[in-house]
Amino acid sequence: MGASPGGKPENKAARDAAAWVFNIVTSVGIIMVNKALMATHGFGFVTTLPGIHFATTALVTLILKSLGYIEPSYLPLPELMKYVTFANISVVGMNASLMWNSIGFYQVSKLSMVLVLCMLEVLFDSVHYSKGTKLSIMVVLVGVAICTVTDVTVNTKGLIAAAVAVCSTAFQQHYIHHLQKKYSLSAFHLLSHTAPAQAASLLLLGPFVDLWLTNNRVDTYHYNNMVMFFIALSCVIAVGTNLSQFICIGRFTAVSFQVLGHMKTILVLTMGFVLFGREGLNVHVAFGMILTVVGMVWYNHASSRPGGKERRDYQEPVKEDIEQGVRPSQLEPDEKN
Image (cartoon, rainbow, N blue to C red):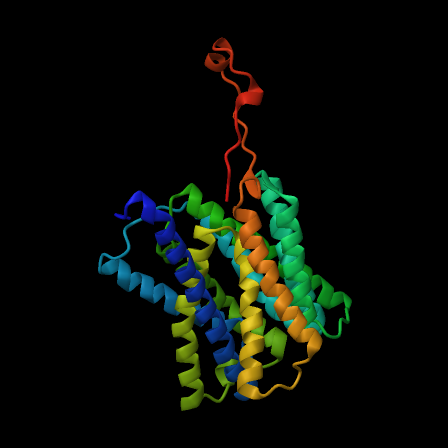
């Protein structure tokens, strides 16, 4: 903030890197903890658990607000309800897609989210992508697909769930960027508005949705000390995950968040090979990992170049411009890196 002009790019790069590391660490951490909670201890209430996560996050933001660390902010109720609707459908849709589809098709559907987000930016933000940026995105998607996609079987119910999950998640992440820019909301501000609403709605609907998904009731589950420990640990990490998502999308865009976020997939695979043996590691998986990393480096370079990714916001010529002889073609578009 107070750095000299020559130091600003370095400071921004450091803050950007810190945001990505924060998101990667918390995202990978919560995957590992939830996997242990669900696979080892059979806690399969995948809608109620996010409700507990958001309740914890809401409590943290309430404490910080009472201590004066979060200043009051404004978000209209219709905007909040629209966001919560997208976010909650995303939670249920992703869980249903994972349950009803093969792992292969689940991964394919998640990869398509980048393409949906690109389309949303083109339609609603007037964003133009250069050829290099488009190709780099495709390289990332192909690399992740090589690493993760095995069998791809599709059924009607699973296809519908995947489509709902991808579209709602894409709208949610695009909407985060929109709300932060429109209402000048920091990550903590937006989280303080959305977390209580999501917690209330998910905790209210979660037990019924989970009963429909699993035929088990959350209140009859046998809780023990180890399960409670993993639930508490999952909630602590979830606060960081929710916050880091808003920080990253606020600093970058939803598309960049998805593209560079595939590094988390590579890290999860790598950690699995290191911690649990090299079963499944072969030439084509290693090639896919290398291709993904190359694609992400290429995307970062291509999208940051002039014209790599820019917003085409041409101003309408006003009377004063016309009188002064300024032609519409002389009005330059604003760049969006």
